[in-house]
Amino acid sequence: MSVEAETGKLDPANIEHASRVIDPVFRGTPQFRDPFLAERLGKDVVVKVESVNPVRSFKGRGADYCLSRLDAQREVVCASAGNFGQAIAYAGRARGIAVSVFAATTANPAKVARMRALGANVVLVGHDFDAAKNAAREHAKQRPGALFLEDGEDPRVAEGAGTIGLELAAVAPDTLLVPVGNGALIAGVGCWMRFASPDTRVVGVCAAGAPAMEISWRRGEPVCTDTTSTIADGVAVRVPVPAAVTWMQHYVDDVLLVDDEQILQAVRIVDETLGLPLEPAGAIGIAAAMEYDGPGEILATVLTGSNFAPELLDRIRR
Picture 1 (tube, rainbow, N blue to C red):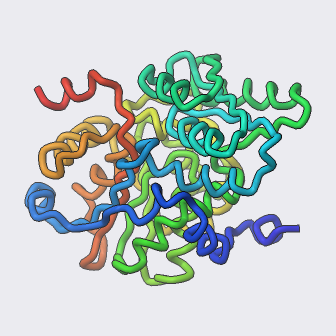
Picture 2: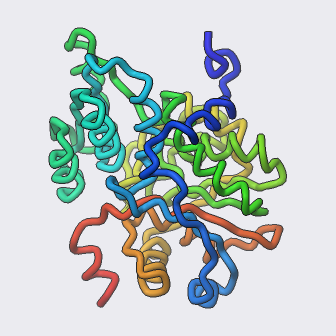
């Protein structure tokens, strides 16, 4: 039995291993302070930029680490709002692994197009991400040898994402604001921070219109919501993954909510100061930073992705 299964925790040794074997295109991403961003926010924030890579998000780290350990003969099936699917498709193409991605009929068309361009078989089904996930799980059951890979459930995905924490630990932030979708990112990063920078406060950020993970973290068990309503489709989780909720109990100090108005303002500020057009989910750490007034002097966050719908730029640049 694995360390993860026995303890409900992730393994820092796997994160360190991932930092050596993940495709270099996803590693060593920029992390810096920007004076113009600091002026707009009224505080210094170290930003970790995870949007400049072939899949335009942090998801490549966990996907690449996970698929590096799979038999090339297996078909991988997953569900995605777009970013995880792109990452799995990219890693699968590099290894000759067939990939099928199930996405909601309401999924961002730009993300769907990119998943297909990366070689994934994309199936649009269901009214939201969680309905698509159920369809993906059933599809995998009917395909001999197929592997259903769930973001937020497979520890290798979280440990691959945890390499972001390994790189940020050099900054030793007092507080690290981490976007929370399925929870793999904050679990992996939080695991490494507990190991290498235990004084760092790890704070999750959810969209107020998709609060399932925030509620679940506070109650210590998965709590579903009936619907989600947020511009940040990348974190619009309605049905939490139990493993991720358990991981968060070990590694997360607090979880905050930000509304769509704050998220759009954050997207606009990052575009105007850093010249980085982020998708809404990619900017929610900045949205939280605008209001955050916690202890310590060094604040950091992760800019998690830039797979935005084309009309978003028109909306924020009016």
